[in-house]
Length: 114
Length: 110
Picture 1: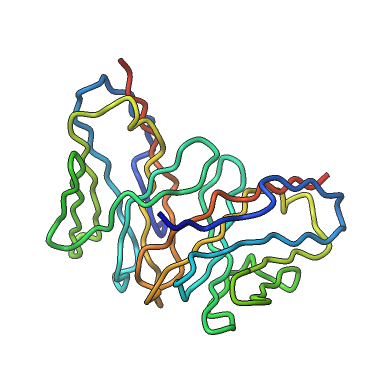
Picture 2: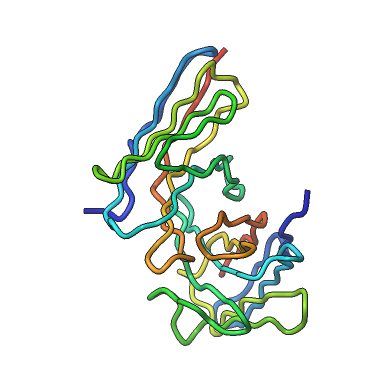
């Protein structure tokens, strides 16, 4: 069964540094998403991406964050000048033909900011 | 009112029991609804979509009541492997932004 893959599985970074989280969505999917889950809390939407541009973003997704689809397969989330409160699991997801279809999640990147 | 609200749990049940989870959502314009399960510190995995007519997948039955803005999940003959957190998820308006409930933890004991 096709799946969304994410790398790295765990990233440890010093506060203030930049991180790039990488995702390879399911190959024929057209809609891409990032979510985060702070330990013990619910999953929160960050951003959706379609046709090489952001469709929607949450209040969390401020100027510190950016997304990019640099080639036909990768989808990245960049976090600049990381803060302690950025520590969380970050999940990438994709859906195929329409944004109201189910989203399929990757196994996440655990980001730890020291 | 929270956007998506679930039973707080946890639910501790013996194998073979029937268990029901409830969920309410606040945005009446929401168009699509799902149940996901999440094992400890893992990714959400799609369990099933939820349709107005109700739908069943093996031991799992999901119901949607748009008038009451209420979603349910029924698990029959529960197995040890059903132990997980069950997430009620609503697609936002406009669709694409999934809104997650806090989740209800289920523990199935031998």
